[in-house]
Picture 1 (cartoon, rainbow, N blue to C red):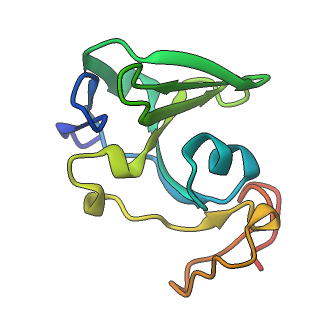
Picture 2: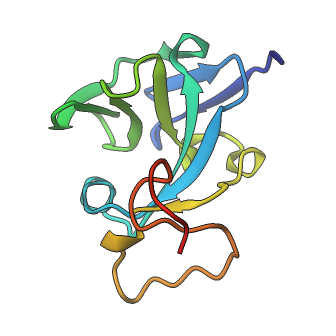
Length: 139
């Protein structure tokens, strides 16, 4: 596996992280929980193997948004940082736009379009799924 040193962090800079390998996935999530946590109509995520992710500085706050999901965010500025689900052991999702260079890993698809707000229309041509990309057909 290719070794990389990709960094990112929160808005205020108190929490910083590093990826030591490229992501194994990327997507834009339209689910209601991501929308409410972020205050945005959708959230872009990259998925990395947890062993290749580490916080370098600062300690994020943790929040269980639903069983079995734990999210982290900066306790100072509130920036959402990660998403971890017990249903995907060994993986962690990182909010793409918290990367120092979010252009490095663009999304490959949209998930949870069944939760999309009606005034958000993406015309990027990426596959879109009514729920998760695993187990559902693209629309």
